[in-house]
Length: 541
Image (cartoon, rainbow, N blue to C red; front, side, top):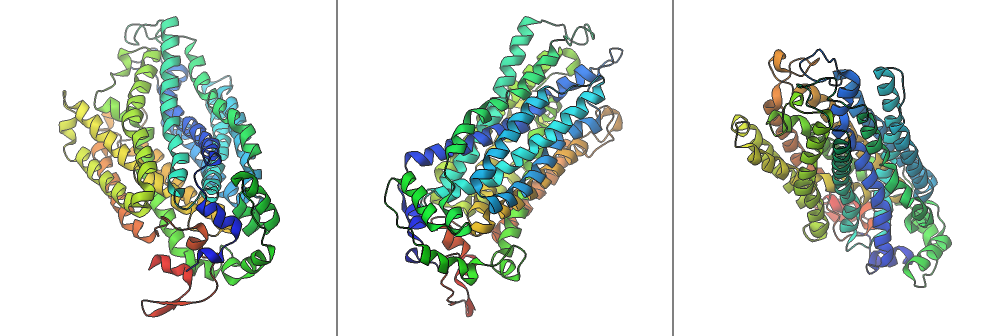
């Protein structure tokens, strides 16, 4: 196995560096991108009911308007399609051009598209929705790039002792982004509700949606640009990571100079040692080579499939919280509220779930990941999610009877807690640690894109699956589904499969990135379990 002495001084210095101010700067700069990602992706679920009321209400109907199924699926899902494409493209580009140079592009794309989403125009409802979907696709494309780049930059800057916590802290900003989306929506809907009072739909259908409600969703969506804009300058000031400069760009002098400034210590550039490292067999194989398949094929399969399964469960719950809250009568029937009252109540419910279940889970991961390890946290998370899903599904009729709603919400919050103190965090962290530097961003992008494919299945599939089995009780325009209860059983099965596939993923706690990827291997073979293996294979044994 790779030994500390085999590594370049600049990389060893990063591995053993004490936690310093630059670590926290990197967490904040990379984390604010994730804060923006989460805000932009999840705030749309808070305003979809409002969009239905503004653009699709027929005042002669007994119920307020809702987005037609195809429009709702497009508005919710198009950003995920963009994210999937962005993860693959920017992940590949991050290995080709460098992490830093691509990092600014993704941020500017997010800022411009957040603003453009709020300025969606059109003479007809279809025109407005089509414009919104167009800009949300490109917003998602920018967000997609943030996944592999943020994870890779943080893993390459961190020391090996606390690397897991640092990457988890970047990802934990997602929790604050979801929380911020709920709080911003609460404040804006409350302000407009106070300024422009309106009767409930059943009392006066036409007056229940005030014209000013159109500004509400636009302001909420556009505010996503603010945090990203604030960190743009600092993103551009960050030096390229030493691991990219040395191992991929093959410039030991620049890597040593950059990290001497960052670590405030003298580092020798070892160009000759680097030349030997990067020309060795362990540092020359490509992504589609037989050598990559032998060394890292199962790792990539493990990181991609577990993220895929996790996101099916995670996003199907997250995007359709409001439907679950309505089905257990936690949010009153739409006709008994005005448009802005409904937005206020949906955002209040989501903020409560974020505060109680989402945010704490992320920070439990930050605190414990370098103590109990990635593998144990992921296994426990998938197992507990399965248990709580079954706990919601088996006595589902009990939870929907009056007086038991709070118990349902507590169980639901625990499912989120163990998603975030579990596979939602670890599936993001591990792909940034176990692959070679020249393929790290690409492999993280592939794993993340696999996750987003799961999110698309969760988002689109659950939209139809959770409909009532009785067509007359299903939402307007939707076919009959399998119902919320059966959908929860399906999701429990998905989580159990994730538990099993976690065994393909290696533990990276306390090891250097070069040790995990085999980049510092000296080419010698060791005998393990009776057969000759290369040093980089021993992680799987």
